[in-house]
Length: 149
Image (cartoon, rainbow, N blue to C red):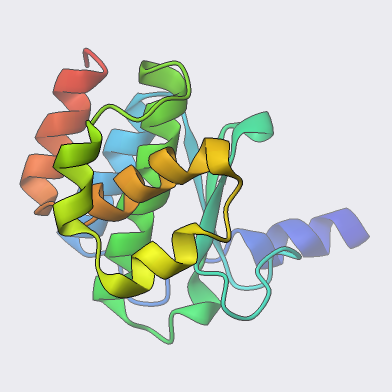
């Protein structure tokens, strides 16, 4: 029963009705074989956690309860976490962009927050923060090209 309850809470529909943009990004992530889980109560969705990519189960978890129905933020988080799956599955756990392609697009807050990550994860995290800013149609096209879809 406990497992069923957790599954029901974890698999809630997105806070706002799926927009075509959200659907397009989700479908693209799923085309590389990664699941997307929209959660209103996943145990690891503590306050302040917007989402994460769990490589061990190849799943992007979106902590939609922490987004306060902000569709733009949901979209940004989905692209960010989806890009981590792309890094893992299409580029051997590495960032695809060079530092000079990443640095100019990091805001001050991101630069500060990157220091919270392990040094080996900082470049991939920085890239995901930049890539989430790419317009959705270009993001989808980039994933399809980069992952040979």
